[in-house]
Length: 278
Image 1 (cartoon, rainbow, N blue to C red):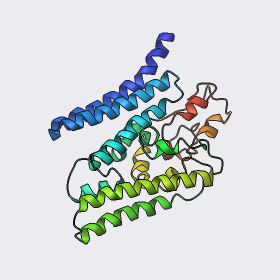
Image 2 (cartoon, one colour):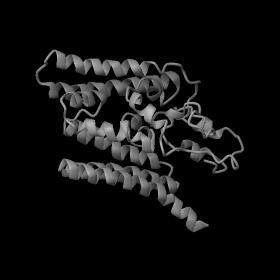
Image 3 (cartoon, rainbow, N blue to C red):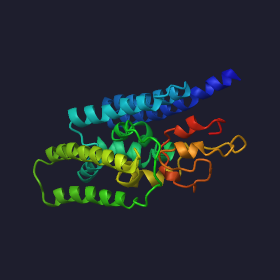
């Protein structure tokens, strides 16, 4: 029995590592650029480490993965390599017909990847969330607002902003993209922190403002990796629902469960369950 439990702790980390390693090797060989091997191997290893530490019951397991991936994406790729990894960078590279940097990142992590691991990016790798999750309101203190429409506005603004630059034939576009990365991240952090304290909810920015969720939500509905409830073990204590930062009804195993596409695989519900039903 103990041996089976030990094996289960390694299954998910190994699956995640193999998934990212497959992506890393495939992109390395097809793009003939070893950067992709190093990049996705590092990200996959970091996320797998987070899952492994969680299985070993280390309480800051997810935060380790968040900071390993988040600081790498923000500091190295963003600040040092001058790559705009925000949604504006995705539009920019897409419009220029360059399939690298932000376009590959979005394809893997936020467009097609969620078919396999849902919104795990939001829980284990987002550099905005890695800061917001340090704030004091880890459990929402207020009912969820009906403000989800705002994310579509920010999505449209980012698209129109980049389109306008191309239509105006602006010079020095790459420099503008770098500064938009800096300004955009500053605004994200500022807005996220203000909302967290105003609504007593660390993840308010993710629920109402973040434009990236427009990509994440549709695919995550069909995600292969989902948290499920063993109804034979569940005692309906409600602790999992209370612990969920995204207000997901995790006891409902259907894909139509309340706020189902909001699940970020943070595993807070799993930690809170007294019967190991999740």
